[in-house]
Length: 625
Ligand code: GLC
Image 1 (cartoon, rainbow, N blue to C red):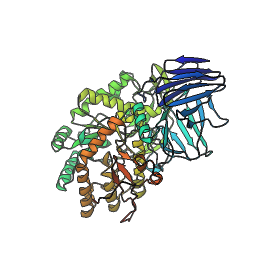
Image 2: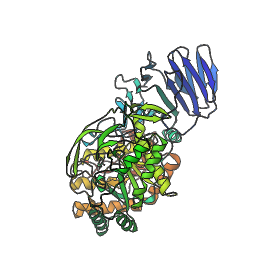
Image 3: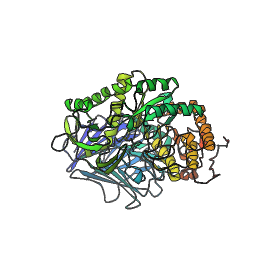
Image 4: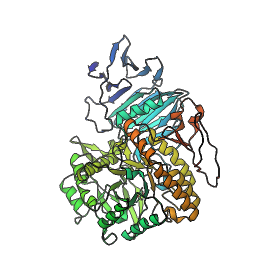
């Protein structure tokens, strides 16, 4: 049966229903369910409401729904579809013999891959930019440095770009539960989508140029928020600067060494036994005084805030959360508890408005201490079964990757597995609310490890616990480029690497590149060697100073690029093929990056290398700095 709707049509099949909507002349939405009713949406990633003119034609054996740019053809029988543009080019077709399948809380959809098709996007994946030939999973996970290359990863951005020569189309899967995309691993011409949940909701986007496609996706899920200017400067961090004194010395060292510095991050040891919204008074006797003094020098303090609240009857944020009934539940409707830095914790259900308000309110304490930025970590969320503790050192053991946790969304109990990939984003939303409440009219700085499509509306992200090895330096280029293609321009990798000791040579190379990361932070793990730019001798210090000063000189351009991405969604870091779409060679270059449309960066990212080859697309020329 067919029912015409305001912006499309609904088709009813024996096994379920399908809603097809013309969101814009270049975007079709497909929503499929095996249920008899539509559920209220969990994901709020999409901000564009359907609203395009469309035409519906009924033929004997098929239906055609079209806009000024696209034609979707749906044959009689079980649900299938083909998409053409108005020039008659076939853009997407079913995989022969395989359609949509829904069965007991899981779904599958199969499409055909064209021989010349290349795939890009999918946010932060540790791989080559072209995603074809592999299986990709979306399930936010605390990857950790020991398995840093693994997939799935900290964040999930299921925006897939398909390129056939210059023809660009995209798929966005608005699915915050477990999702997997097989891009030709099983068969080179088979693109399969597997998901857990009762429905599949996805968007098909038509460029037809890559440049237009990226901007179209930005209209769908929103562009990057604008951070304050100081957040574009250099951030110094480590796990952890243990005392107030240490932080004071840090500020002095930077000054003495004539290194610019805009922010210092306080990792978990600033808190009393890792309890969020507390300060360890013994270690930080006057945090307020410290932040004031630093601010006078243009240095802002950023504090880490993890989602877990320690379960304890002496800890008031937890008691308040309990009282407000905003904690996540387990299958028996009791408080869900898991382990994290402070020990046994309970977790705010950020999907509830009241939980967001509660969380925002708790930030008052930190802002009163002069904290200017919030760093949200462990928000996949990460849960441990146990850990080892030696004084300041905590070693997590065995993660819980499929927690039996429940949320209340739209007044219904929803299993965590249906919405996990949105949890960190919901925490970021709550943190934005905190800034709105306590710092009205001011731009905020939030850094988040986890996220879903649209995280750029609330926070910047970093790529998690990388390693102090050359391959992770070069690997960061494609991670950051890919995040940018997917709307997340405000991002960076830990400069110098997080785990293991960084060598002088590696640090020099990393700061040369990192000085151009949209988000520029040096960070390292507990027990690694000191990693501030002045810890590697005179030569490296001079290099670091030169490049960091260059970043600050470059700031007006960088700032304008932030503005541009905020307005249009065009990325700050760009792959060569975005600006040179007709150059086949440009597709293969993954160790160079364009900043904006005209500055080409070709960093040295190989150990012992003293020179490198540069690919100069036509029209670019060389300047040496
Ligand atoms: C996680 C974070 C890292 C942080 C550490 C301690 O490993 O990814 O950046 O330093 O936790 O808070």
